[in-house]
Length: 323
Image 1 (cartoon, rainbow, N blue to C red):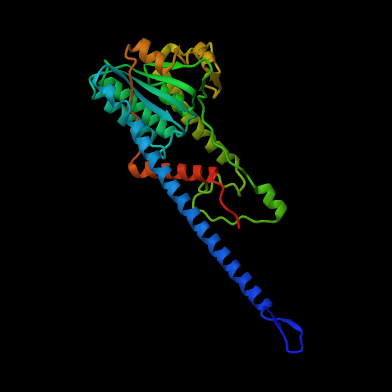
Image 2 (image 1 turned 45 degrees about the vertical axis):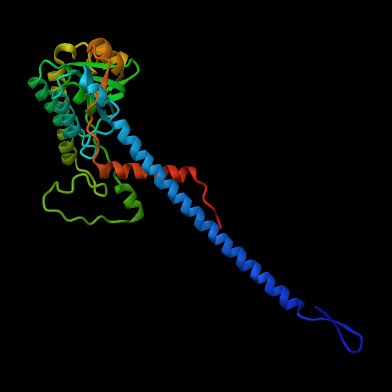
């Protein structure tokens, strides 16, 4: 504000003070506005995450029950063998529960074990192999076949050999009838770094396999003996399941751990025919309607998995504000 002094001079009064106060107030209001915008943005982000999670759970529930309508008429039972064969995936339990559920339905014309697995635990594989043969013996009128998709190797083929018939795609990866165990040894690196390993054991072989201790010839022989024994169990199971379909004399590499394509596998007796779940259910079982009998995960497991997937999806697609 300008005022005129008695001597006629003009003086500016209060301009700097009022301008500073105005700028400060504007900055304060702007910061409050930004904070409100951020809070609203995060509120909508979390609302979106929960909506996606809810929709994902609904979708999983719907997809899990979409085949129920076919149970009342002739149909093919499908049970999935997916991922690594181990106790975490509960492979054997799901397989047994799925087969038992299918056998209880009188309209099931056949069971397809849809396999897509690189293998896994020899213990879980043998449990599944034995249970398939046990259930087959109790229900001889219901055929059990394996349909391989991308891959059915190692422990997966162990399980598959228990089926009546094995179908594959010509490009499927099958076989790998072998056992592997691996690790690392850091003793040379420790010598270079001047690090000394101090491990106390009671029992000459208690520390066998420790990567920071040298491996003795005796321990190496023990490991090899164990692998050979497990491999023999694997080979015996395949021979029991496949019978004379595999000619080991003509195909000496078949039990060497080699992987074959589906086409090559058919030539050496690992595969019976080419086919898919659609062609087998339609042309072999004459029951094109398919119902998936694979047991679903518990609600808590499904919820956790869906939540993790939805959170990852949200993190991948949302661009968060930066400040």
